[in-house]
Length: 458
Image 1 (spheres, helix red, strand yellow):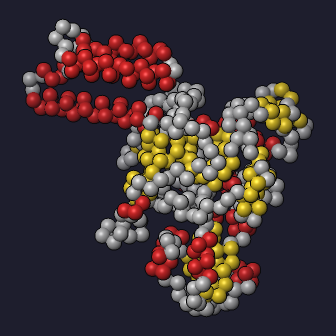
Image 2 (tube, helix red, strand yellow):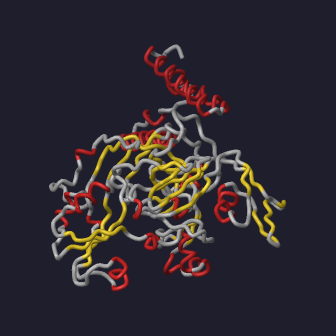
């Protein structure tokens, strides 16, 4: 200790102060028992932490130097990813035009408060699968109970939020889209579980190891959410439309070709471009009153691009894609007459709510009761039992949210899989730090420089 330099003392004191502040934030004071080890690393050095530096064999010393650096880096990355920041890449067009496919986001976990890792033994740079060797990137046990640290703010209406996919708890590895529960609805549970050649192995993933999704929060805990003819209402109040919101349309021309270059100028990606050169199926053509033999385009349009196309020479008719094209919506095991364009009204539960539970509304809240809050639910002779006791009400343990994509007709969101529990919330995107256009080559504008450091919060 007498040989410690001033620099060592300064580093040691700074490290201990940061560590103690972290412990206060985490609110687990058992970790204070490790404080002497931090101090010893920088000052007292009773433990020979750098023992490998005295090895005479240069090769072994070099290897141990790399091992030491890699271990330190992995530990640092683990804590940074767990409590502060995380990278996220936009994989689909569900949030276009707000966020584009190929955008890389810096996501703040401190914004809404980071979760204490529920699956603590995991590799920090992989969500659930290690690349190349294709094995799990985590060890399932131990599993810690959900706890969230103090954040900088709460989720607000219209925030863009990163969260773990709620119905990603069970996954058919060979067919992950649509999700497992939708597959069971389409093909039957027995076939999905037994036909491994088609669907692959069925695996379970803990909450924090499920796929990361990013959507816009359109309903907060305690809100009543509704969609009427593609217009969102919250608590009966019509909500403003963001400029980037899109819906799918069918566009027929008089034979004029809408080239990919023309549509690219309107910021419509190749992935979203679909054309039927000689019209469409007879039933669809009759539905819209389209003329046979003339090209029909199927495209997502914002209000701005809709107005531009309407003024484009050769465009004779534009019709919005019908709700019937959207498929089954949540809850999959009931029919309330809802669809993706006309949905609800639906109450979004908040922590502490005493929800009235009936056979009529049980399909909406069943997953909350059983899967997210881990209760046993039974129905006997038309009577609901929760944990063996007859129940007409249920006290909600967590807050829940409703999430939609801005590309409304190309987004798998809450309309299809329901509520997002608070323990699934990962964080809030801060900015775009890299953006790559997959439709262009490296020297043809692949890097979208104009999107660098774009605000991604809303």
